[in-house]
Image: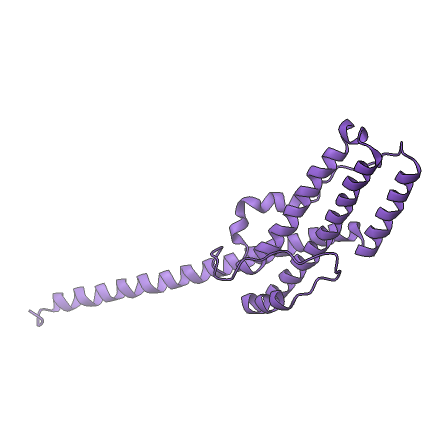
Length: 207
């Protein structure tokens, strides 16, 4: 049977087809990995820029404390003073990519989500403070709510700095570098804490 040249032709043809499948599959996986890496870099850059712009608006922990204490002193002096609270909207980039959040690696996703989650909580409190019900509160209660608002702003500042740090660490050295930075990160202010980050064993995007 093996002396029949047609058998050998079929074997050789089948071998070439199998090799073609293997090579094609390898090339497709390589292209997909490159495409995913490029998309991740683009998303990280966009989020880094948005977070940076937001943090520049917030200023620093010291500036937030000075501003808050100054306004609280004025509220104590003038019981009729109700601080003007602007509407909060600082997540346009994140809102755009939230449907594809799985593209983010496990090393940065927790820090990023913690930051934007804090922005969402601040926005909700800001809406409450713009309401007539807030204006009708007694002065001590208004001051307490406003103090919480400033504390949440300071925490957002820390969360944002942490998110930026993790994005840079991942860009510099991938998952291993980001994990090292996460373990050694120290908040800049004793009044704030770094956001919780899930264990690397917890499944996210697998990166």
